[in-house]
Amino acid sequence: MNRRRVVITGLGAVTGLGLSFEETWQGLISGKSGVGPITRFDPEGYRTVFAAQVPDLGDTTARFGPQADKKLDYFTQYSLISAEAALADSQLDLEAIDLDRAGCIMGTGIGGIMAIEAHHINMLERGPRRASPFFIPKMMPNAMSGQISIRYGLRGTNFATSSACASAGHALGMALRTIQYGEADVVLSGGAEAAVSTQSVAAFGAMKALSTRNDDPQGASRPFDVDRDGFVMGEGAAVLVLEEREHALARGAPIYAEFEGYGSTADAFHITQPKEDADGPTRAIHAALRDGGVETHDVDYVNAHGTSTYYNDMVETTALHNVFGDHASKLAVSSTKSMVGHLLGGSAAIEAAATARGIRDGLIHPTMNHITPGEGCDLDYVPGEARALKVRHAISNSLGFGGHNVCLAFGSHEA
Image (tube, rainbow, N blue to C red; front, side):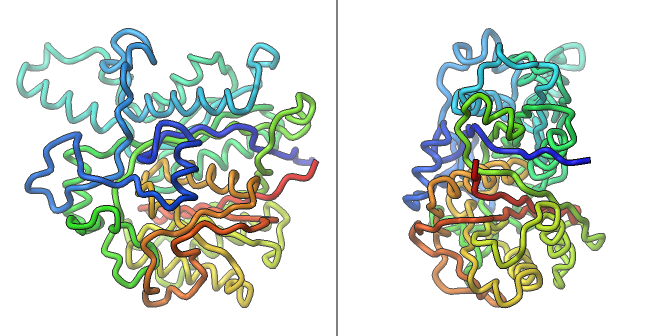
Protein backbone atom coordinates (compact mmCIF):
# COMPACT_ATOMS: atom_id res chain seq x y z
CA MET A 1 0.00 0.00 0.00
CA ASN A 2 1.34 3.43 -0.96
CA ARG A 3 1.13 5.79 1.96
CA ARG A 4 -0.31 9.22 1.25
CA ARG A 5 1.79 12.33 1.79
CA VAL A 6 0.87 14.79 4.55
CA VAL A 7 1.42 18.54 4.70
CA ILE A 8 0.91 21.25 7.31
CA THR A 9 -1.49 23.96 6.14
CA GLY A 10 -2.43 25.86 9.31
CA LEU A 11 -0.90 26.88 12.63
CA GLY A 12 -2.50 28.25 15.79
CA ALA A 13 -1.07 28.71 19.26
CA VAL A 14 -1.46 30.30 22.67
CA THR A 15 1.70 30.61 24.80
CA GLY A 16 3.38 32.84 27.34
CA LEU A 17 4.47 34.99 24.39
CA GLY A 18 0.95 35.79 23.25
CA LEU A 19 -2.54 34.69 22.29
CA SER A 20 -1.69 33.82 18.69
CA PHE A 21 0.92 31.83 16.84
CA GLU A 22 2.12 34.98 15.07
CA GLU A 23 2.80 36.70 18.41
CA THR A 24 4.58 33.58 19.60
CA TRP A 25 6.67 33.30 16.43
CA GLN A 26 7.70 36.95 16.47
CA GLY A 27 8.68 36.54 20.11
CA LEU A 28 10.70 33.43 19.33
CA ILE A 29 12.69 34.89 16.46
CA SER A 30 13.40 38.07 18.45
CA GLY A 31 14.61 36.11 21.48
CA LYS A 32 11.83 37.34 23.75
CA SER A 33 11.05 35.53 26.99
CA GLY A 34 7.49 34.73 28.08
CA VAL A 35 8.59 33.98 31.65
CA GLY A 36 7.60 36.09 34.64
CA PRO A 37 6.30 35.97 38.22
CA ILE A 38 3.39 33.59 38.88
CA THR A 39 0.16 35.57 39.17
CA ARG A 40 -2.47 32.80 39.09
CA PHE A 41 -1.92 32.08 42.78
CA ASP A 42 0.26 33.43 45.56
CA PRO A 43 3.60 31.59 45.19
CA GLU A 44 4.94 32.72 48.56
CA GLY A 45 6.71 29.78 50.19
CA TYR A 46 7.19 27.83 46.93
CA ARG A 47 10.65 26.81 45.77
CA THR A 48 9.91 28.42 42.39
CA VAL A 49 7.85 31.59 42.04
CA PHE A 50 7.85 32.11 38.26
CA ALA A 51 6.48 30.47 35.10
CA ALA A 52 5.62 31.21 31.47
CA GLN A 53 1.92 31.98 31.89
CA VAL A 54 -0.53 32.65 29.08
CA PRO A 55 -1.78 36.27 29.10
CA ASP A 56 -5.31 36.90 30.31
CA LEU A 57 -7.91 35.64 27.83
CA GLY A 58 -10.36 38.44 28.50
CA ASP A 59 -14.10 37.81 28.19
CA THR A 60 -14.33 34.01 28.03
CA THR A 61 -18.12 34.14 27.75
CA ALA A 62 -17.78 36.04 24.49
CA ARG A 63 -15.18 33.54 23.28
CA PHE A 64 -16.80 30.29 24.35
CA GLY A 65 -20.40 30.94 25.37
CA PRO A 66 -22.27 31.04 28.71
CA GLN A 67 -20.66 29.51 31.80
CA ALA A 68 -17.39 28.98 29.91
CA ASP A 69 -15.23 29.06 33.02
CA LYS A 70 -17.48 26.53 34.74
CA LYS A 71 -17.42 24.14 31.80
CA LEU A 72 -13.97 24.52 30.23
CA ASP A 73 -10.63 24.15 31.96
CA TYR A 74 -7.86 26.43 30.75
CA PHE A 75 -6.18 23.70 28.72
CA THR A 76 -9.37 23.26 26.69
CA GLN A 77 -9.84 27.01 26.29
CA TYR A 78 -6.29 27.30 24.98
CA SER A 79 -6.96 24.43 22.56
CA LEU A 80 -10.13 26.00 21.20
CA ILE A 81 -8.43 29.35 20.57
CA SER A 82 -5.55 27.58 18.82
CA ALA A 83 -7.86 25.41 16.70
CA GLU A 84 -9.87 28.41 15.53
CA ALA A 85 -6.70 30.25 14.53
CA ALA A 86 -5.19 27.21 12.80
CA LEU A 87 -8.32 26.68 10.71
CA ALA A 88 -8.39 30.34 9.71
CA ASP A 89 -4.70 30.18 8.83
CA SER A 90 -5.26 27.11 6.66
CA GLN A 91 -8.07 28.84 4.71
CA LEU A 92 -9.98 25.58 4.98
CA ASP A 93 -13.69 25.82 4.19
CA LEU A 94 -15.28 23.20 6.42
CA GLU A 95 -18.50 23.31 4.41
CA ALA A 96 -16.57 22.20 1.34
CA ILE A 97 -15.02 19.04 2.79
CA ASP A 98 -16.27 15.67 3.98
CA LEU A 99 -16.44 16.08 7.76
CA ASP A 100 -16.67 12.31 8.17
CA ARG A 101 -13.04 12.35 7.00
CA ALA A 102 -11.92 15.19 9.27
CA GLY A 103 -10.65 14.37 12.76
CA CYS A 104 -8.95 15.76 15.84
CA ILE A 105 -6.16 14.17 17.89
CA MET A 106 -4.68 16.13 20.78
CA GLY A 107 -2.17 15.44 23.54
CA THR A 108 -1.92 16.52 27.17
CA GLY A 109 0.23 15.26 30.01
CA ILE A 110 -1.89 16.39 32.95
CA GLY A 111 -5.24 17.61 31.67
CA GLY A 112 -7.62 19.59 33.86
CA ILE A 113 -5.58 19.80 37.03
CA MET A 114 -6.90 23.25 37.92
CA ALA A 115 -10.44 21.92 37.67
CA ILE A 116 -9.43 19.06 39.97
CA GLU A 117 -7.91 21.42 42.53
CA ALA A 118 -10.93 23.75 42.53
CA HIS A 119 -13.43 20.89 42.76
CA HIS A 120 -11.55 19.29 45.64
CA ILE A 121 -11.68 22.53 47.62
CA ASN A 122 -15.39 22.86 46.85
CA MET A 123 -16.03 19.29 48.10
CA LEU A 124 -14.13 19.89 51.33
CA GLU A 125 -15.91 23.14 52.02
CA ARG A 126 -19.45 22.35 50.84
CA GLY A 127 -19.78 18.57 50.85
CA PRO A 128 -20.43 15.91 48.20
CA ARG A 129 -23.97 17.04 47.37
CA ARG A 130 -22.58 20.29 46.01
CA ALA A 131 -20.33 18.57 43.49
CA SER A 132 -20.40 20.21 40.08
CA PRO A 133 -22.04 18.29 37.21
CA PHE A 134 -19.51 20.01 34.94
CA PHE A 135 -16.48 18.60 36.77
CA ILE A 136 -15.91 15.35 34.88
CA PRO A 137 -16.34 16.76 31.35
CA LYS A 138 -14.18 19.72 32.38
CA MET A 139 -11.18 17.84 33.77
CA MET A 140 -10.99 14.81 31.48
CA PRO A 141 -7.91 14.93 29.20
CA ASN A 142 -9.97 14.27 26.06
CA ALA A 143 -12.17 17.30 26.72
CA MET A 144 -10.05 19.39 24.33
CA SER A 145 -10.36 17.05 21.34
CA GLY A 146 -14.03 16.48 22.06
CA GLN A 147 -14.80 20.18 22.32
CA ILE A 148 -12.91 20.97 19.10
CA SER A 149 -14.80 18.19 17.33
CA ILE A 150 -18.16 19.47 18.58
CA ARG A 151 -17.42 23.08 17.69
CA TYR A 152 -16.43 22.31 14.09
CA GLY A 153 -18.46 19.18 13.37
CA LEU A 154 -15.39 16.98 12.86
CA ARG A 155 -16.83 13.47 12.69
CA GLY A 156 -13.68 11.49 11.93
CA THR A 157 -11.35 9.91 14.50
CA ASN A 158 -11.19 11.84 17.75
CA PHE A 159 -9.12 11.12 20.86
CA ALA A 160 -6.40 12.34 23.20
CA THR A 161 -2.98 10.94 23.99
CA SER A 162 -1.22 11.21 27.34
CA SER A 163 2.46 10.35 27.67
CA ALA A 164 3.88 13.19 29.77
CA CYS A 165 6.12 15.50 27.75
CA ALA A 166 5.76 13.33 24.65
CA SER A 167 1.95 13.58 24.57
CA ALA A 168 1.54 16.02 21.69
CA GLY A 169 4.29 14.21 19.78
CA HIS A 170 2.32 11.00 19.97
CA ALA A 171 -0.87 12.87 18.99
CA LEU A 172 0.81 14.32 15.91
CA GLY A 173 2.27 10.94 15.03
CA MET A 174 -1.14 9.30 15.22
CA ALA A 175 -2.61 12.09 13.11
CA LEU A 176 0.09 11.54 10.51
CA ARG A 177 -0.70 7.83 10.35
CA THR A 178 -4.45 8.49 10.14
CA ILE A 179 -3.99 10.53 6.97
CA GLN A 180 -1.21 8.38 5.51
CA TYR A 181 -3.34 5.27 5.74
CA GLY A 182 -6.41 6.89 4.18
CA GLU A 183 -8.64 7.12 7.24
CA ALA A 184 -8.96 10.91 7.02
CA ASP A 185 -8.07 13.79 4.71
CA VAL A 186 -7.74 16.45 7.41
CA VAL A 187 -6.79 16.16 11.08
CA LEU A 188 -6.42 18.96 13.60
CA SER A 189 -3.66 17.87 15.93
CA GLY A 190 -1.41 19.25 18.65
CA GLY A 191 -1.50 19.54 22.39
CA ALA A 192 -2.23 21.70 25.39
CA GLU A 193 -1.33 22.09 29.03
CA ALA A 194 -2.40 24.42 31.83
CA ALA A 195 -0.42 23.27 34.84
CA VAL A 196 0.67 26.55 36.42
CA SER A 197 -1.26 25.42 39.47
CA THR A 198 -0.57 25.09 43.17
CA GLN A 199 -0.18 21.30 43.06
CA SER A 200 1.92 21.12 39.91
CA VAL A 201 4.35 23.86 40.84
CA ALA A 202 4.74 22.46 44.35
CA ALA A 203 5.18 18.86 43.19
CA PHE A 204 7.59 19.55 40.34
CA GLY A 205 9.49 21.72 42.80
CA ALA A 206 9.63 18.87 45.30
CA MET A 207 11.16 16.70 42.57
CA LYS A 208 13.77 19.45 42.06
CA ALA A 209 12.81 19.48 38.39
CA LEU A 210 12.11 23.23 38.26
CA SER A 211 14.65 26.01 38.07
CA THR A 212 14.87 28.05 41.26
CA ARG A 213 16.50 31.08 39.65
CA ASN A 214 13.93 33.31 41.34
CA ASP A 215 16.12 36.41 41.01
CA ASP A 216 16.27 36.05 37.21
CA PRO A 217 13.14 34.35 35.82
CA GLN A 218 13.79 35.28 32.19
CA GLY A 219 17.28 33.81 32.42
CA ALA A 220 16.13 30.63 34.14
CA SER A 221 15.53 28.35 31.14
CA ARG A 222 19.10 27.66 29.99
CA PRO A 223 19.09 24.63 27.68
CA PHE A 224 22.47 22.93 27.26
CA ASP A 225 24.15 25.57 29.44
CA VAL A 226 26.56 24.70 32.24
CA ASP A 227 24.47 26.73 34.72
CA ARG A 228 21.11 25.13 33.95
CA ASP A 229 19.26 24.10 37.10
CA GLY A 230 15.89 22.82 35.91
CA PHE A 231 13.04 23.60 33.55
CA VAL A 232 10.61 26.52 33.63
CA MET A 233 6.92 25.65 33.82
CA GLY A 234 5.05 26.85 30.77
CA GLU A 235 1.46 26.60 29.60
CA GLY A 236 -0.56 27.01 26.45
CA ALA A 237 -1.51 25.08 23.34
CA ALA A 238 -0.73 24.66 19.68
CA VAL A 239 -2.86 23.13 16.93
CA LEU A 240 -1.66 22.21 13.45
CA VAL A 241 -3.92 21.53 10.48
CA LEU A 242 -2.58 18.39 8.85
CA GLU A 243 -3.85 17.61 5.39
CA GLU A 244 -3.38 15.00 2.70
CA ARG A 245 -1.10 16.63 0.14
CA GLU A 246 -3.31 16.25 -2.93
CA HIS A 247 -6.32 17.46 -0.93
CA ALA A 248 -4.37 20.59 0.03
CA LEU A 249 -3.01 21.23 -3.46
CA ALA A 250 -6.45 20.86 -5.02
CA ARG A 251 -7.79 23.77 -2.99
CA GLY A 252 -4.66 25.92 -3.32
CA ALA A 253 -3.89 25.73 0.39
CA PRO A 254 -0.91 27.51 1.93
CA ILE A 255 1.69 24.88 2.86
CA TYR A 256 4.27 25.36 5.59
CA ALA A 257 6.09 22.05 5.35
CA GLU A 258 5.69 18.36 4.68
CA PHE A 259 5.21 16.07 7.68
CA GLU A 260 7.48 13.22 6.67
CA GLY A 261 7.97 10.76 9.50
CA TYR A 262 7.32 9.64 13.05
CA GLY A 263 9.30 7.50 15.47
CA SER A 264 8.33 6.38 18.97
CA THR A 265 10.26 4.27 21.50
CA ALA A 266 10.58 3.59 25.23
CA ASP A 267 13.61 3.62 27.49
CA ALA A 268 12.21 0.85 29.72
CA PHE A 269 14.57 2.18 32.36
CA HIS A 270 13.28 4.72 34.91
CA ILE A 271 10.01 6.61 35.45
CA THR A 272 11.63 10.06 35.39
CA GLN A 273 15.33 9.81 34.50
CA PRO A 274 16.46 9.14 30.92
CA LYS A 275 18.98 6.40 30.27
CA GLU A 276 22.42 7.96 29.84
CA ASP A 277 23.40 5.95 26.77
CA ALA A 278 20.49 7.66 24.94
CA ASP A 279 19.41 4.38 23.34
CA GLY A 280 15.68 5.27 23.43
CA PRO A 281 15.82 8.67 21.73
CA THR A 282 18.49 7.38 19.35
CA ARG A 283 16.12 4.67 18.12
CA ALA A 284 13.21 7.15 17.92
CA ILE A 285 15.22 9.51 15.69
CA HIS A 286 16.37 6.65 13.48
CA ALA A 287 12.76 5.46 13.21
CA ALA A 288 11.42 8.90 12.22
CA LEU A 289 14.08 9.37 9.55
CA ARG A 290 13.56 5.85 8.21
CA ASP A 291 9.79 6.39 8.20
CA GLY A 292 10.20 9.58 6.21
CA GLY A 293 12.87 8.23 3.87
CA VAL A 294 15.27 10.95 5.03
CA GLU A 295 19.04 10.49 5.00
CA THR A 296 20.91 11.77 8.04
CA HIS A 297 23.20 14.03 5.96
CA ASP A 298 20.14 15.82 4.55
CA VAL A 299 18.91 17.03 7.96
CA ASP A 300 19.76 20.67 8.65
CA TYR A 301 17.84 21.54 11.82
CA VAL A 302 16.81 19.98 15.12
CA ASN A 303 14.14 21.51 17.33
CA ALA A 304 15.42 20.00 20.55
CA HIS A 305 13.50 18.77 23.54
CA GLY A 306 15.97 21.07 25.31
CA THR A 307 14.41 21.23 28.76
CA SER A 308 17.31 22.90 30.62
CA THR A 309 17.66 19.90 32.93
CA TYR A 310 20.99 18.17 33.45
CA TYR A 311 20.25 14.67 32.19
CA ASN A 312 17.79 15.53 29.40
CA ASP A 313 20.09 17.97 27.67
CA MET A 314 23.11 15.68 27.90
CA VAL A 315 21.19 12.59 26.78
CA GLU A 316 19.57 14.37 23.85
CA THR A 317 22.96 15.62 22.68
CA THR A 318 24.32 12.07 22.95
CA ALA A 319 21.41 10.79 20.85
CA LEU A 320 22.16 13.33 18.13
CA HIS A 321 25.80 12.20 18.06
CA ASN A 322 24.67 8.57 17.96
CA VAL A 323 22.42 9.16 14.96
CA PHE A 324 24.26 11.77 12.93
CA GLY A 325 27.92 10.98 13.64
CA ASP A 326 30.19 13.60 12.07
CA HIS A 327 27.16 15.39 10.59
CA ALA A 328 25.99 16.29 14.13
CA SER A 329 28.42 19.21 14.21
CA LYS A 330 26.72 20.66 11.11
CA LEU A 331 23.22 20.65 12.63
CA ALA A 332 21.56 23.81 13.88
CA VAL A 333 19.89 22.87 17.19
CA SER A 334 17.59 25.16 19.16
CA SER A 335 15.18 24.98 22.09
CA THR A 336 11.77 26.64 21.96
CA LYS A 337 11.46 26.05 25.72
CA SER A 338 14.16 28.64 26.39
CA MET A 339 11.46 31.28 25.71
CA VAL A 340 8.01 29.72 26.26
CA GLY A 341 8.96 27.36 29.07
CA HIS A 342 8.03 23.70 29.15
CA LEU A 343 4.43 23.13 28.08
CA LEU A 344 4.70 19.51 29.31
CA GLY A 345 2.21 17.50 27.22
CA GLY A 346 1.71 20.42 24.85
CA SER A 347 5.39 21.09 24.20
CA ALA A 348 5.78 18.93 21.09
CA ALA A 349 2.94 20.83 19.42
CA ILE A 350 4.37 24.34 19.75
CA GLU A 351 7.78 22.97 18.80
CA ALA A 352 6.40 21.28 15.69
CA ALA A 353 4.65 24.52 14.75
CA ALA A 354 7.87 26.50 15.22
CA THR A 355 9.75 23.96 13.12
CA ALA A 356 7.22 24.14 10.28
CA ARG A 357 7.23 27.95 10.26
CA GLY A 358 11.03 27.99 10.36
CA ILE A 359 11.20 25.67 7.36
CA ARG A 360 8.83 27.86 5.36
CA ASP A 361 10.53 31.13 6.30
CA GLY A 362 14.11 29.87 6.15
CA LEU A 363 14.61 31.23 9.66
CA ILE A 364 15.56 29.33 12.81
CA HIS A 365 14.76 30.76 16.22
CA PRO A 366 17.59 30.85 18.77
CA THR A 367 18.23 29.13 22.06
CA MET A 368 18.24 31.88 24.66
CA ASN A 369 20.37 31.96 27.81
CA HIS A 370 22.90 29.54 26.35
CA ILE A 371 26.21 31.10 27.38
CA THR A 372 28.63 28.35 28.32
CA PRO A 373 28.07 24.78 27.08
CA GLY A 374 27.52 22.21 29.81
CA GLU A 375 29.25 18.86 30.12
CA GLY A 376 28.48 16.68 27.10
CA CYS A 377 26.70 19.56 25.33
CA ASP A 378 28.95 20.32 22.37
CA LEU A 379 26.69 21.09 19.39
CA ASP A 380 25.62 24.29 17.65
CA TYR A 381 22.65 25.39 19.76
CA VAL A 382 22.02 28.63 17.82
CA PRO A 383 22.74 30.80 20.86
CA GLY A 384 21.20 34.23 21.28
CA GLU A 385 20.06 35.22 17.80
CA ALA A 386 17.80 33.84 15.08
CA ARG A 387 19.57 32.45 12.03
CA ALA A 388 18.66 32.47 8.36
CA LEU A 389 18.88 28.88 7.19
CA LYS A 390 17.45 27.01 4.22
CA VAL A 391 16.15 23.83 5.82
CA ARG A 392 15.74 20.77 3.65
CA HIS A 393 14.74 18.44 6.46
CA ALA A 394 14.29 18.88 10.21
CA ILE A 395 13.40 16.82 13.24
CA SER A 396 11.69 17.71 16.52
CA ASN A 397 12.33 15.61 19.62
CA SER A 398 10.19 15.01 22.71
CA LEU A 399 11.28 12.93 25.71
CA GLY A 400 8.80 12.31 28.51
CA PHE A 401 8.57 10.97 32.03
CA GLY A 402 7.84 7.27 31.75
CA GLY A 403 10.71 6.84 29.30
CA HIS A 404 8.67 7.95 26.27
CA ASN A 405 10.63 9.16 23.23
CA VAL A 406 9.11 10.71 20.12
CA CYS A 407 10.77 12.16 17.04
CA LEU A 408 8.88 13.93 14.27
CA ALA A 409 10.46 14.54 10.85
CA PHE A 410 9.55 17.46 8.61
CA GLY A 411 10.73 18.67 5.23
CA SER A 412 10.53 21.59 2.87
CA HIS A 413 7.54 21.14 0.60
CA GLU A 414 8.05 21.03 -3.13
CA ALA A 415 4.80 21.01 -5.09
